[in-house]
Image (cartoon, rainbow, N blue to C red; front, side, top):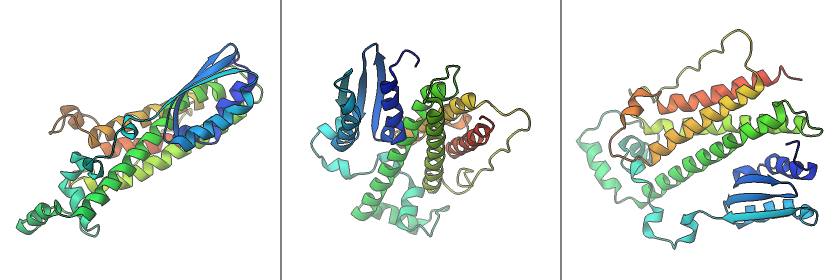
Length: 280
């Protein structure tokens, strides 16, 4: 960052301060006399906001923006776009919960089996499950984007180089990102709990491990830990939504449960917030 012009560093930080990073998936590549931004925008509005942020610098620096959108946005609408992912639609526990949230299905008898078959004729249920899947995916993607930016922000905020006007702002952004990651993890935990059968262990809140006594982890390392935990949880959630096989992979049985993985993100976020108070 010492080799980057101060106005370019400033716009990079403001990109994060405005939380544009949750709407535009971007990589900044700094050059001697400018920078390139490779990005995938959520929509045209978020891309316009990014361009307005860059506009004051266009006369002084060369700034090239290479933008694209998701493949799905380029394709025409198809009927299957309104259907939930098969992994969710075939989840009997979740499907039953979405029909009646007051009932958690643990035992299936003939009457409940019949209602499962009838569910295929319920367009409202399909719509609710589609919205549920879209919400889980959106939160997962935003959590992942925040996590991917933490290492570079941690370098600016807690690295060895003390850059004027950067360090304190970067630390404030990191703290905000980590708190947001913890919030998204909490929402995902509560949303995904009904998708697991009762008695599986995943339907019960796990007890967060108490922080060990001793020397607190440095904020730089703690931020990287949050990023790693969040990205690991992201991969588990994506495998849950879009499994490659029809059956559970053996690694899913050996690794910590999905909800435990999400809970660990909340814990690592809380650890960072506590450890960062020790730095002045």
